[in-house]
Structures are given as C-alpha cells and as structure tokens.
Amino acid sequence: MSASTVGSSDRQVVFTDQAPKAVGPYSQGIIMNGFVFTAGQIALDPTTQQMIEGGIEEQTRRVLSNMRAILEAAGTSLDHVVKTTVFLADLGDFAAMNKVYAEFFPHNPPARSTIGGAQLPRNSRVEIECIAAL
Image (cartoon, rainbow, N blue to C red; front, side):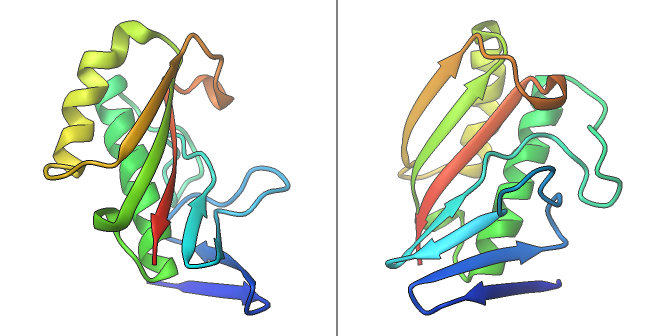
C-alpha cells in the first residue's frame, strides 16, 4: 500500500492510492489533534476513478472500503471510528445500506447521523465521512 502523510506536526494530510484521488480541492483525510477526519467517500474504484457497477449494497461496500484504506494510511482503523455521517440519495435505501454498514461495524458501532434526499457527486447513491481516533 502506498500511503503518505504531509504537513506540520499539528495538521497532516493523508493520501493513499488505495482510495480514490480527490476530485476537487480537498484531501482524502486530515490528521489533527489525535483524530483523522475523512472526506466524504463515494463508490469510486480507486484504480479507475470511475463509479462502480451495482446498487446501494455494492456502493456502500465500496465506500466503506475506500474509507478503511484512508484510515489505515493514517495509522488507524474502522475500530477507532467515533462518528460517521451517511448521506443517502434516497432514504428508501436505508435498510440495505444499514445491512452492509453493520458488516463493517459489527461491535460497538460509532455514533452516526444519516441524511437523505441529497443529490450526491457522480449520482452516487451513498456518501460516508468519518472521524476516527488515532
């Protein structure tokens, strides 16, 4: 895995080629004050930078895999996530998203907010961001 952190001791930028490159002026993640803050992840394949095929379950799995790669590049893991925010294009996808989400957070899941009815980048059905402790 190729990963790097760049910046001062107070604020470090996290980058890994195991997650999609930023498609705008933002970082995949930022480390500050003992926490990692990830950018919202959509279902982009990190190799092709294209949306993956499939519905909400496949997209949620890809999103959480991308998020996991950023956290690992920062030196932490999904086990240290304290808060997530989930954005759904359609709240009707909540149950299917939640089923996959539970696979990634099987025990003591983080606090979470879920927002529905949002138009997401590249017509993604789901976007997830998180805060994790180092």
